[in-house]
Length: 190
Image (cartoon, rainbow, N blue to C red; front, side, top):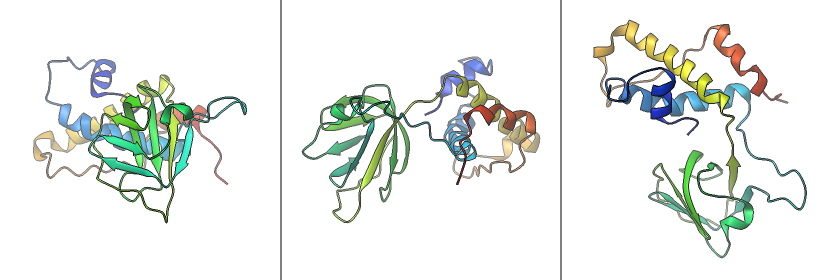
């Protein structure tokens, strides 16, 4: 994830022992992360700087998913530059596309914080894995977007929602003062 719940609470100066907003923060973090990546047309993938550098990218039809692990048949994730505490972007899977926080890499297996849907290798499609590196400044920006969304829910009546019934809608009209913060991270779309 772009930022942890603890980091967001610290930035927003919400006491660590105040759990009243935890549910909403947990739900907003991936939504805001996805909004930032989509709005900027930038998934912050690490690009190799030379042919001799690690590629930080893998395209394979032998990748499978279970619980909290990505498994690779007959290959080694470390050769591609994947390492502990990185972020991983997955595309081309049937059920697990997204960005995940890597806990550990053990040759042919990556363990992540989040949970995957079970998925076995398929010869008819390739799954791409990319290493992701979010700039530290994006944590502050994400916290500002989360604060904006939290204020919006507070104005609507915070007691009206529960985890099972909570529907998060990203505001299509964020204030320009927030959107302007994302300009340095935007990539052109062709």
